[in-house]
Image 1 (cartoon, rainbow, N blue to C red):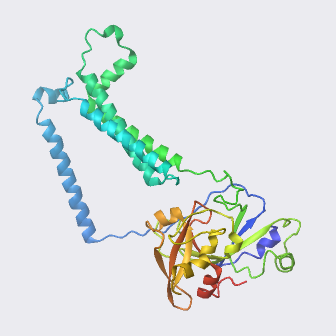
Image 2 (image 1 turned 90 degrees about the vertical axis):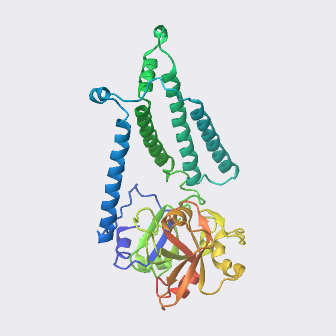
Image 3 (image 1 turned 90 degrees about the horizontal axis):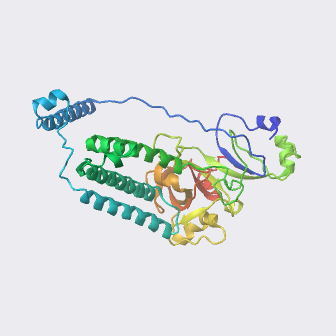
Length: 384
């Protein structure tokens, strides 16, 4: 857009949302959001907190003293541990537990891959946790075997790494605590990196998370004229037609609400509603799973208009599509068929029902409904 055009779409009240295809991609930027946090306390909360802290402290002291009570005075003065290096504990049980956990992790991954669906976070963390515990159990078994073996007569075969392992076996519990903390930290860092997505991969594909759009813009006031009409663009928005050559617009009507995305620290109660025309979204984005009983057909977005008749829904229920990660996390494990209560501008209550899920997309944080339903509920917002 030219600088002159920007002056016509800057004001105070948000009620318009547009996607632009065919425009140049802007430089990378990072979203910034904040939430107001207010301190709140009560006498009950203070009492529960103090009592819990006291009980935990007493329990910790008792647990430590129970172990120290088994040591002699000489060991306590020397700072030695009662842990016997030559333990009678067998490593067989730890090896069996580790093997079962490893097999379980492989089974979870194979099951997720065989289903043909995208690996869910629950499956990833479940398999990862089992592999983590399996590794710790194998490490415990290894240290137990080293502690039971005799190093005498093996000096000529001991290497620097072998000496390090035997030193770890000397204080197995302390070594396992260190191994566990490092393993858990590495797993958390790796898991965050695995789920980090590169927005530039297949960004020009219509079925990707960008929908094939190069720019996404939100106007501060209603864009009341058709941006796809060259004459209206020239008359009302002073856009340079040379810059607009090959550029198309897909408008959405916006009813403002809670941002249901990762930038909102609070759970969204009534997310923003976007009203669009299903025919303009045909072939764009990816609807991964429609509600049972609905056939997506050539244009899955048509479900926004056909779901009411197919499912015999009342007029008080509005079909909607939302990002699957928003439904799972931001809205508190919402499933297809669940509803959220809203009130239209006439004061009438209605429900928005989830009839489809979007794969990760730039529309995250919004609920999409048909423009016809949007106009019926909010006729004063962003009319063309």
